[in-house]
Image 1 (cartoon, rainbow, N blue to C red):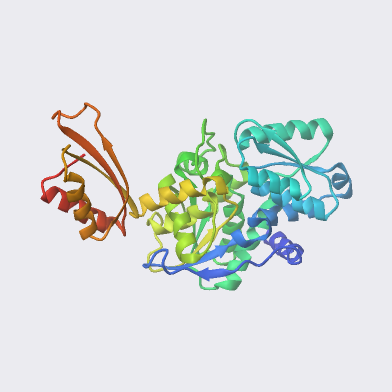
Image 2 (image 1 turned 135 degrees about the vertical axis):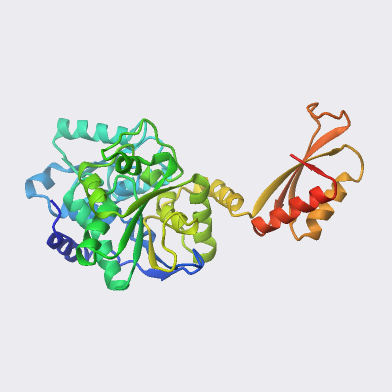
Length: 397
């Protein structure tokens, strides 16, 4: 169903609409690899999804365009469809999960689409969209399991080979699989030696499980900060593409995703949403074998919900060894806090929070637990503080 000619046609069609996003070197992501970021977070609408949505809509017949289009999305595909339809003068209705970030819902409306919020996750919105399609005759724009959508997303692969002809590995986020299917097909067709690695969140690993079991798996439940890839079941076409063209699929934890978002903000000055940061997390934490290779991480989107950004950063700080809480059991007597804080200060950390717990759960009636939170440099500094506290006779919990 996929033909390389269609990918070049998509590239020509999209050339007057999309941004050819920069490929930026990012040496601090993993010093053992030559890492580059394909910054699709800087794409119009803040995500790669515009590519597939716009190209798909552009290929509809006049009759299909007249009926209007409908789509379902966790947010980014919604904005791509909305912008594409509005620019072509076509009516669009988007079904989104009710828990989609408000920022994405409002952005979809601003781009000219009518929005229908559906309780549940992406798959529930998908079912509702099909019901409305059948009832009103809309043309359904699938977010990933469609040859034209995949061709549109695959234009990223064509761009990468132009921007970095000697690329050796490309690391790509996976939700339903449209992005990695397009990139993998395009790149492997032109240079089969390039390794393609897919990354999913541990809490939404439907494609990874499908590849392991050699059949499409439907997860009962998905939960991840990477809401853009929280898909219960991969597509038929995308599953086949991944089995044929993708070299390996790995998963990353919530803490690793948060650490990657933080790293991108701090060192690369790039804002990524959870789904966009999973590729970076996989390279940061050596989940994929890219040591010594010219490696591209596709940062697929930047539409992070600002309401959760503070929590994401805090979890990233913890994972990166930048924040640590020590729980210390000690005698509830004057001078104990001074002793502890002096040890921490002497080793270069900064105390940011202190809490005394005097609940009667300790063996000694006169004991308390000190919860002391510190800003630290890294895991090595945390270990040094821990060892010094123990050396000076303090009991850590």
